[in-house]
Image (cartoon, rainbow, N blue to C red; front, side, top):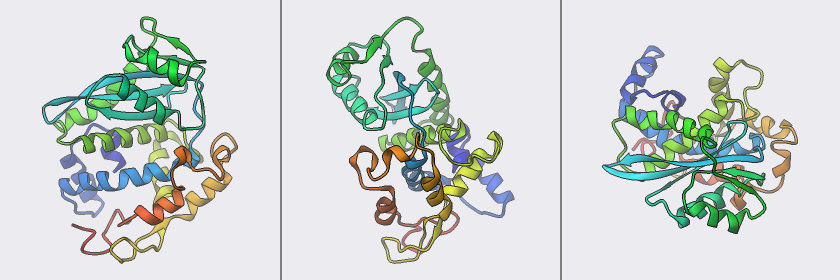
Length: 274
């Protein structure tokens, strides 16, 4: 799955390395794995995420979905960590407010925000971040504008996307994988950059039995991720101890309630494979 999110390859190109490892999977199955499991991995990892920097670079880019342009809002901090993504059919004040409301639900409030000269940003920042400095100088937003290219190469290699839902999952999954690769999580800290993604997904992979929503046996978060949450330094998970981020249910309860068929290599029942 992280091959698909990390590199601009087609789903058919992922079939060959899987076949070399003895796994027979159709290209459509690979994409279904991404849609099903990428949000679960992304939701299990926030307790191990590093705190963001206090300087944010915010921008939007356009991605075509079924022949129609969609605006993709993204924010990157001074360390290169992708803060949040939002897909919107319009580029207006309402979309900008939604994006900043979601991004500010984390653990850090920026003191400096750099954006382009869109008219909606000054009004939204006055409402939500009136104490932050707002910069719109030329070339000041190059950090996030250059970061857009890695994401836009992903749907371009797929000849486009067909649904907004798919774009949301691919954009969020790509941001999660990029943050993992850049070392913004307390995961796979004992391996080098080359093996970081594989080791991090291994730590996040389910390991303990759990019932899926259809009644079959699946899995729950492994002991590796449990120990990572417990031993993460104060700058990561300790700041959120006892309080789920963004006011949503805790990650453990989300695993219990939303995890249907966690085994990415096989299915736990016939209904999960549909």
